[in-house]
Image (cartoon, rainbow, N blue to C red; front, top):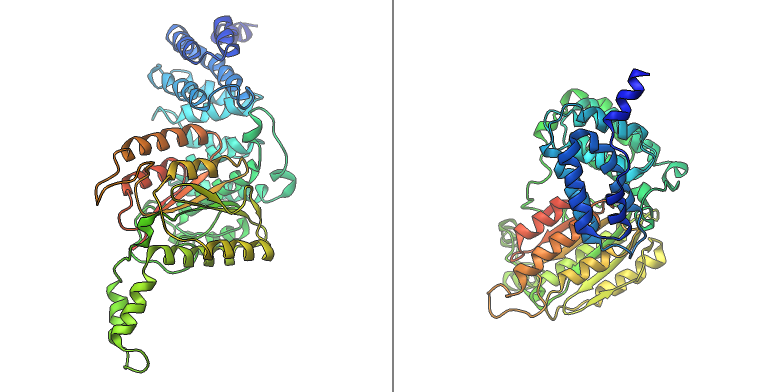
Length: 447
């Protein structure tokens, strides 16, 4: 009886003012009331705020602006970073175990990252077997950065579970409909990416990781794995040396006028020509052919064609080209059948460089498909709607890059779509690196 009384005092009841603000879709009042509750009740407000987050995320698509939803979520997480954490870890664990809506459980995991005194890794280990793929994805990302070898077996087990159609295709309600579509694939990818982060090896099935780890356990050192290091050379496999790991993929390719530029050949390529015997074309002619092949648009077409040709039929994909406008090959993701790959390659071969660089429109078009789990963005310049003069950055580029980063965070914060960015010489690398890092991907330099 004493314990029940204590628990009833610890948790704040439903708050009428907060409920009213959420019903009115009033972002400012919702955030203000959350702050007031936490200031008044501290840790005891955690359950009420978790309920509020779940309420906001359950509002149907189109009835609450996505940027405002994100503001509510981020504010709710950050206010607990300033709360005395006595009892906070227990509250997080309680919500993870007992709350019946997955956005509240995701919120609890995100709060655990705000305090170094809270064992977020242990909480993530307890959540890696959650029934909701969205919770599993966040738990896997926490474990990915833990550098903890003990996380590998739970990740393999979770990855194996999400390979099963019975698990992957089961819909777990609790959030907006758009967040449910193919969310099981995103959970699987998050587990796969976590194992790659811990081992430095890119594999494509749970059994492959299990066998590799069993054979190399004594050699694994997560602290030495660096997947973000720029790659100065590319191998020609995948997409400019980047392994294609998504299941529901959109390739976004810049075909603006600057893609006509020719990149300088590598020293190795020049030495290879110098070593020729003189049979056939002259060295000058071979250099001319080499330089023509170094045009960015040709390199991009070649790499993209190879990537499409290598897609297994278990993948779904589309292609979006962009310059002054956005041109999708398909309005929806389609299976990578032989017929569809052939059609896509024909689309690629017709791409010609011209116009400016409406990166924002192309990226948001890719994100508009609720089934996508991975985006590969190939570009060589700054986003712009007005173009530039000479080598100067377009005057609207800075504001566009800021808006792309902010809006993409908001759109993607519970979806978990991975965005990989690939930049030729002249690309805005800081922007592309941030875009990839914020969205569970990596940036690759194309040289």
